[in-house]
Length: 267
Image (tube, rainbow, N blue to C red; front, side):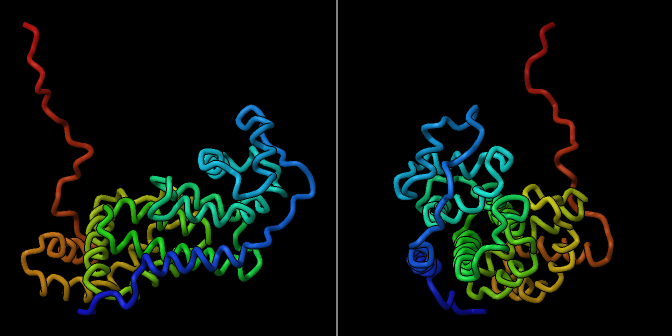
């Protein structure tokens, strides 16, 4: 794990986009005009959504992906996603307009666009793109909260967290190691505070994370040995050991503390 990543995640991302363009080059046809909540989406925009996917403006694309599933015709909703998927991937990517794609990605789940039921080539290229996005998030120095949110959205879309944790565990190199250490400290700390919960993966069980973290201790310890001045790695090991021993957190829970007012009193 001392070498750098064996691949450039940005190159992987660009290659996956090209593959998605090929896979989705002949999108499924709609059998009737797009139906939806006209209170939220005017008829003029519904017509645009039913036309050429390349002609859908970014703001309308974002609105579609964020709008609740119940505001669309159930049988049309997966078809619209399949037609717009290459656009959606670019919207979520490093150069895209979405600041936090986790909720939008979660719309692909079984209560939404039903990604699991899509044709195998389409499903495979979408999952490949999600792996690239997760790799970029972990290795590019993003805050661990952003990685967690993305991971939850992906788990919600695919119905499972464990393959994505395995993907993180399989990434080698200093960037991946550092990202894992940041993630492990945040997750272990929240578990110790009994404050770990999922936002976007509605069926998720935090025990999946609790069971996975100890499997990464050796890797984190190796990182801590290589970087003896890294407090994040040292604290991550402390938190993991406290979890293993069923002990309490050595750090005060910050969100329940009372803060003194600095405003002067009006005497």
